[in-house]
Length: 456
Image (cartoon, rainbow, N blue to C red):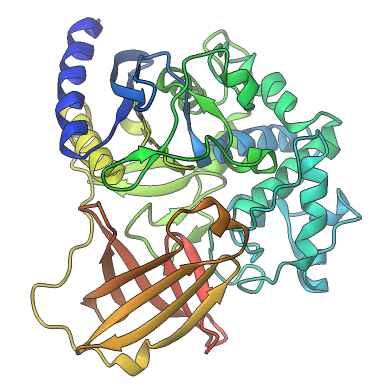
């Protein structure tokens, strides 16, 4: 048996050191290895203004890791014959109206789960606190212009998962929050996993922090309609209980079958290669993003809400899963250091390195890149300045109301033709910017998981 007390103490000390280095106010870490929770570590403050310390039972927002939970329930309904991966969504929601007839009639469950629908994902309209919030949100999607043709590329789609949540409500007759409790939280024996703020108030809960240095965020959470895409709050211990479900072929520790082994495998099967294979993974499955580290398969998901960041990675061949929940600062650098050390120690795996700017000059013709790229909530302008390229990014629409800094300017550092990296304020990591074209020749940028078309 692993000495969990010793390992937890060691990781508490190490996490204390690393959170200080990366200006992260509070962090909560869990490590699951060979079916056993071998370490937990909680450090720093869950709320700097209130002086609330982080404990292993502190709830953090897991953000978009919630998408894999919603996907798991969807795939269980596929097992039961209530949903079909490749049947049009209008077969379940005949009232659905999207931007054009092709999208309305053609979009399927698979398109929603692997982010290839073309529905612009960053629609963050608040449709209220009522149990009908997903129904109201789905009715708004007809006014949203697609950012790419159906199935033409991958673009991260929050709105598609809110639509998915509505699909689940219709086929089960159960509102999404209760459906998560019924299908996942209770069967997994989770006691510190919730979807609503009034439920989180029963526990010690973290709040996000923004900026450099990190200051408490003005808002705790997103609107209720974002639930299926990113409103679950939990602890690393309970997120890892969910991960164990997938390591154990869809069966809980007590022997309850939630998802078929075929469904588990399908979620980990590549559906589409990513235009940007450098930041998250090289492909997307159903719900999970997929990668390879040092020859070993990796699947996982990240989450980002208002000042909170969450990271989950699973290495199935090593029977290893790691969850890190944080509330501000340079969380990407913290994630990379923590996970690199853990996978090396427990699996003998070297984590894939990130891109760096080229060390030698790269021949770049600015005319190939300058212009305006735009989609819902984002307007990107690439301009030439002092012999180099600069990306001017403006956040627009409802998302701008949730973001304190709506305009950013980044210098584009070339890696190779068509591939650049930028460095965000307060972060040491480099983030890729990929220029590419669709099959029809339309120029696009892929950055932050989103595909943005050139419009001028």
